[in-house]
Length: 92
Image (tube, rainbow, N blue to C red):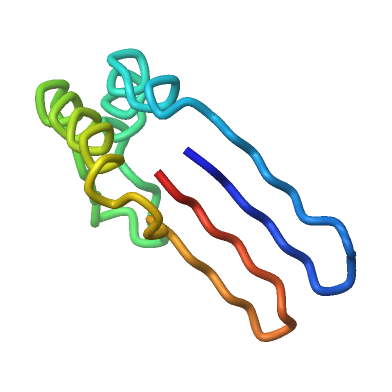
């Protein structure tokens, strides 16, 4: 996984190269499940919104992201272009 951050005001570009397996593994799936189990806080006390992801669903998501690396070669997973010229890209 490559994360590229370019800022218009700075001449330096930040390149982070991280192994995809480091971020897409069973531990990350467990953390995702724990964080999604907590209900979101809203301004209205009567409404409680909960988006719970089960552990098997999270494991399938992590496996899919690892497999995506092979058929998304060169295509960014996330690409953000701001109005001031700053860019953020995440490639698998």
